[in-house]
Amino acid sequence: MGNVEFVVCRDDNGKIAAFHNVCRHHASLLVSGSGKTSCFTCPYHGWTYGLNGELRKATRISGIEDFSINVFRRDFGLVPIKVATWGPFVLLNMDNEILQKDNIDTDNVASEWLGSSSELFSLNGVDTTLTYVCRREYIIECNWKVFCDNYLDGGYHVPFAHKGLASGLSLDSYTTSIFEKVSIQSAEGGSKEKEDDRLGSKAFYAFIYPNFMINRYGPWMDTNLAIPLGPRKCLVVFDYFLEASF
Image (cartoon, rainbow, N blue to C red):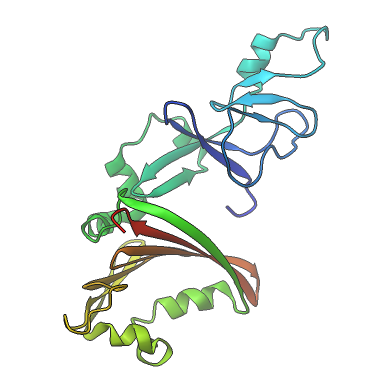
């Protein structure tokens, strides 16, 4: 997330939490990648934190004047980040004022992130029933805004650049709807005789300002995150989801 290092985890009860991925001792990164663990141990000096962010162990500092593990547990835990879930997504908010508030309910999360378009996502199958499949990453030789601009052209390029996709859609039904932070493009599938198993009966493409895209079609959903790498290069991260019945 920009230059902010973070870690997201669930405890044994399934409660989700997020923290800055920085040890409170000498600011080493704690973890990388993904996996399962019962705690986070700093690779630099071995300070250990629970999945709730609490400092469990500070190595080889017992006997130091004014040291108290109870004080350290209270004052030197991992710095939390406000976290919430909506549909299949985990959302982080770096605003410290938001962090001080009580847990935000799902409706408020949807409203803050998606504005008045949030109900359309649920109606078009963007929900928790989807199973995560895999991730693919591509470096593209263009400015990230060019990638987003291509996505937002209302299907203008589809008949020429994506002939296979175009043959599975009824392009005459293609529409674009603009909301506060979201642009939604949608189109009906082709005739039943030509209906593409991958596309299904409808395609739903949503752009969420400034650089996140959600594509829902048939049993599939994929998301695209465009990350700037320079004025003429970007990284696009694709995550794929599939309905559980497939």
